[in-house]
Picture 1 (spheres, rainbow, N blue to C red):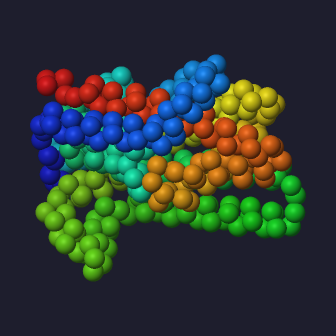
Picture 2: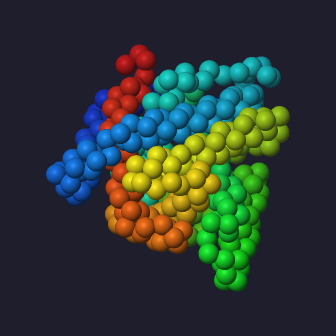
Picture 3: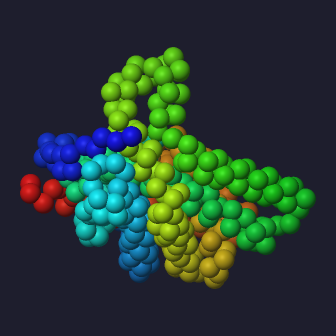
Length: 351
């Protein structure tokens, strides 16, 4: 069956849309600083002045890994799927620098989106569409979210043996870690299975059966050809393009392994000699805690409370966990500002 393809270069994200996104982000950015307190934030910046630069650079590397993963998936989705191209002909991709700007901007928008951190995905699709087409851009974002989640689960699973070594031993701990390993492993296998079974179309059918969102499903029904295209391109990840999928998973995992270096810098700045393996556990537990409380806007209080509990579990000074969370927020604010600036750099070249 021939799968319809939308035009390769639809209209770029309008200046008005960019202005709205930028204004919303700027208001949220200022509100975060105001909530933390201008004087307190300035004092924390001064206290952490030597460590802030290195951890900002560390996350620059993390976003580079995210960009590599996304571009690998874009490459996997450029093979012929009945869209009229000759077999084996690659479609255009996004230059790395532009893809990096879009990636950072989308993560920044996700962070400042209250309740559910998914505001950056529509922006990523709109910003990528002028280069690769709307259908392929949407498929790449779906694939990236899938790979991003699977890499996160893999990261947590590999952290469990380290958590067993770092945390106080008890029968309850062993049972708890074993149970978590089974749950995470099961979810990972389910995600593998869903991705191979027309996920987009199955999701649309499920939405059509739910009373509260049937109208949304009806509106999406007109885009079924696009969903069929997304499913067809997802299928490529399990066929000849499996190597690119594996490469994207590896890049995402390396990004998480690199991100935990942040905790090494922060703990040394406050006088603690924490090894990389302990930092790995801190990073895994912190991400798990935040993901379980994703519904709290801007992670208000959850980051500080989570770091307090994690430091206490690891028999480190608990109060220093709060300081570590504040330094992490400062790094986040820096990258939010950079991401909002990149909103403008993600415009179409012809704009």
